[in-house]
Image (cartoon, rainbow, N blue to C red; front, side, top):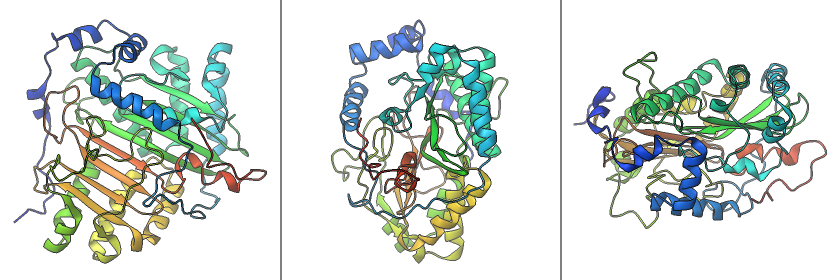
Length: 428
């Protein structure tokens, strides 16, 4: 009988998987900055599997933007323009304060057209594959502080703390592998799309290893999608930020939900029993995304519905689904988050929950919640910097997509005054 107590506690067990820092991968990395590291990767193609994936990403970027769907057909009319109470004046002031602090070359580098396809070139590996905007570890402390103020003004207080936690954990990882020039607390790029304004569409992308946020604003409405948040390890167990931990609530609530299902529902939700299951079709698993389907460059992924329908679950289980979705919407300011949750709940009749892996307290796992208006994924990964060959609970990847063209605020753009019906023709 599986316990419903949640999960077994875990903390510093990742240390048994610390890598050998004397091998060429790390001795070379320790001598490079982010740019040299990225250029060497692009030139030499190592590791081969990641280089092949990068080349595939570039091919995907050539596709006109369509959006994630469950069947290949975009459903329109799902996302209205609405007042979400976003403090747009404060956000614009913070953005302009940052822009005013930049020199002419930096301002040119950080500024893109609101419809630029460069918005789609974020990625979560530590390789700086798309070097746009300003990089926070390469600017003055004053400029960096103003950049972080843009992020703080745009996110909820708890969402900002989650982002800061991801950044600090990234810095901790850089210390563990002694490569802080490549992986550190501020190894993140920021680029603006459109001029910050209270009455016109604009946004920004903030991205780097294990934290990628795309924000689109129109007046008092915000879309934070797609985003990616991860951690390896997901807990800082030493140093000035000791105790920092992220993604544990998403993990705990997901396991509680799966464990609370009846045997028949569990069998329906569990689409694969093993994390790398022989029954998986070719391409269902890859080294970088592992079980994730909607990561970087997967803007047009077709993801068929799988698992159990949330409307068929009991009230307590539906409450757990809402709790999970609230964690995934945590970056949104409070009013916007509440409105997005209410919208997601209205689609419970077409919301699916699926699971990969075991569901004992100590088991690593993957889950997805998917509807026409939201798609979230959670995945325990094997090691990238750490050496664990099998997925472990101390390496977590999470992401959110807004299906049917909702990513990057694309579904809203045809609704804006003076717009033309071209929002879905957005080529890389």
